[in-house]
Length: 161
Image 1 (cartoon, one colour):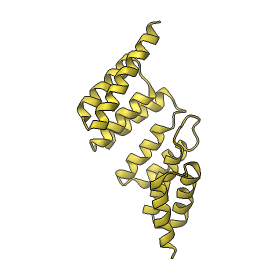
Image 2: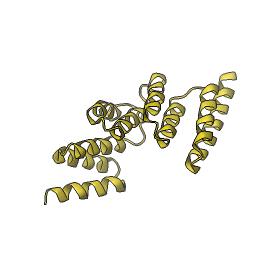
Image 3: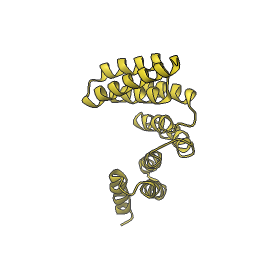
Image 4: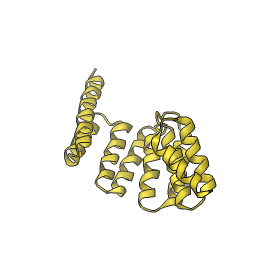
């Protein structure tokens, strides 16, 4: 019963942290995600804590938090994609690729279009437009409403005209 209570408390802190994060109150969000983790560590809390650090421009700490998430649940896709995205932001394109590839293969990921989109970003930045086109198409196959992927696909197609 104690574990269930701890998990419920962690979820409350997590939701409150997310609300603060979305309002831009990042320091408070960090504190609340940490309290969630103290109550009951989850891969989601570590991943969202990392995401908050990315909002602050601290990609190295964001990556560390995502690695902690992976330690807890190696089948949770978000932290793999997020690490890839943070490495892209740091200009480390080649280092991002294996993380994004892993994100496409894990069992538990509710937004599988994201790593394909991010892989498209990598290939586009590397001027490999054929691969970028394939990656953006895959993102759209997985989520036909993904507007960023639609725009990226149009942009890449324009490269061929």
